[in-house]
Image (cartoon, rainbow, N blue to C red; front, side, top):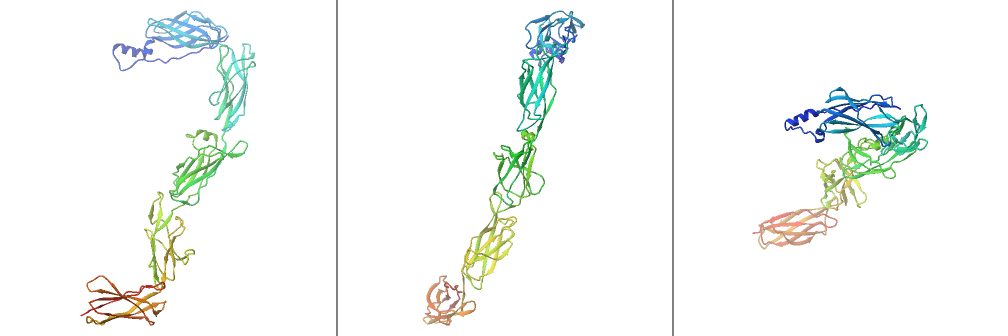
Length: 560
């Protein structure tokens, strides 16, 4: 029979000083009630003859009062027999009753097995029990052999292993025999720790999961008859699976738009087969064009059943996009330790702005055939917050003309001003539509103004206008005459045209139509009136579908 020495060291507290101070005065230091109640403590309990079935027991103890008696109780470990053995023959062999060593006078003999030793210390104040201070180990040695673990390489998708082993006991003569009904546990596996019970042949078989690389080891904690033991360690390697990921972001991005960053995540199993990786959280990041590596998280998309992810993002400025998987050991440790990292990065994406044209106008309307048309407006651009403002990155604006409003021809181009303003002055060659266009550029989207139709007509002019005589007697005749010319484009007389004659009395601001007369074949017109008061005479040709209205010459006549 083999006996084992098991010593328990007890840390010495400042109990004596605290209790003394408490007795003298009310201290700010509080001593727990249970600590104050213990008058004696154990430093160590020793088995003096560990290699013999018969041994003496030694107790080293101290107290605040004399220790008057030391006693031990020996009983079976775990599931052993119920009998208990009291040991009362301790004597002080070293030190004093306040701090000394006590030893049994006679040796204690135990049967085969493992035995707990409780110790009681008695002072004038109390008897205190200190349970399970040491074990008298007279059990049989055990060994776990025939250990197998299959497979020894696992991965995140296949973490399971099968383990086998056998628990044997060794007698004094070295013979081995199976231990039945003992519980073995597999360390290294994930919680809950797998446990199995040995059969009649001492063998076990079970399963466990290994989420990390670890050593698989079968352990037996021992029983009454048998000592604890552990098997040899078998390394189980967790293999990280290779992954790959794609990332697609449109090449041309418009500020303020919401676009979708998309791609696919796949993994390669240990057989080399690639397949979609579903339900995995990714990290989508953005870095400004400056390229300073200041990546900011823009989204946390999750892959679907086909490994595809879609992440809506709002375009605010130029830059590059990246997506990564299994690169966050703190927040997503299972993915980090289960898979090798995969990432994808785009090139820098240039962003463009939407444009529009405000206040577009072509003038005059109608326009003279040999005159000019002035076309003006303002280019606007849209910012990331959806607001429109003048100016922006447009580097040109085109003026276009169309006779039918469908087929357009570029007529002129210019760079808009700092506030987006533009102004074209072009010859008026024919009837048609005018519009302004911002062409598609490196930083802007194209836009066009509405069309403005300009009717081009022949120009007219009244020459040699005169109201006579000047002065004139009241009641006499006043003759108003002049010549209408039309420019087609050369100057020609304008026959058969209606000329409107107006009169405004002196001191008045109101014109009164006095008559309508037609021009003769040579373009001249003449009309007579009776002079009644001072005033101004005026003639005007208002134009037609072919001709623009003329100027409006006037002549003042003094009536006496």
